[in-house]
Image 1 (cartoon, rainbow, N blue to C red):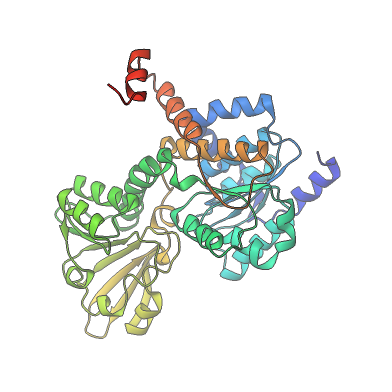
Image 2 (image 1 turned 135 degrees about the vertical axis):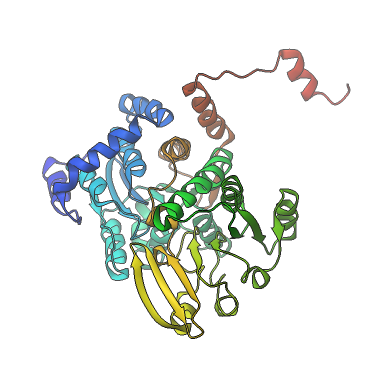
Length: 425
């Protein structure tokens, strides 16, 4: 454990916008607690068992209320907790202030510059973590590149996103990953619900809140048909849109076709779409060749982790004028008079222009994070590689979710178990 003086010093060293915003943030935290019964159950056990006693845990996620509650649950498990943002536009300053008021160290504020963002990650590294929860891989990559000496004290970490897991597997493949990391994103109870239903709803929440435009009858182009793209396309269809899917993977393209969507290359869809949503995890997905053909007054939004999917350099190069027409909407006017509207600076539209995934969805994801972190704390001699979430943890979260809803399911009889286990039947 840490001395009280050290706790006070860490409290005073927090880098946040305004501690006076704490009451507003506390109200948000109280709201999500009412809608996260799975994490509530785990938190109550953490209060009793203290699995993180004596550990320093850093959380580098989108700092809004649901994430804040996860940090509180980990703190209740005995940890000293510090948080920083994984995206400068998704931070909610009132939530961060509320966390600091309750003894969690924070380095984040909304609208941080790139320099400030990485300075906050530097401060998070100075916290000397033993356990990590990362989102997108920026913090783990920073430790490996800039602070390798700090990795010796790290027991392990969890990664939340597809983008982050891709980066981790790259580190592992090159033989330079120095700590065990759990790929929380790849758990069934994560991507089947968070990626699909969470992204699907929250992306359209952000777009509709920001634009106040009708979706029904419009043409929506979804670029990328992974689990997030499936959710975005499904919700667009439910809102009455005509949906086009653009893919590079023939299997996913075939799946989109059989799900009832038109499939074509982006260069062909460019002149047809009213809304374009990138969900690929790659860079320069919408670029100059597409912008040269894009429909007048098209709305561009990104639902991938980094703001590189829509080429902002190409937009700036082609534009004869750029101006902010509404909060989170930039208008780019081309030389031929066509306009396109970029939402949330090309950053994650569901968090930069909205409140992110629904609380009930993040309840499952953050339950996976909490239990995976507990697994790492109990198994502090793991090899430095990427681990999948265990089937036991994955199913436990789903069971807790059903139980919280009062839903029961069937169980196999002993006869059925024996039948499934036998080959000579």
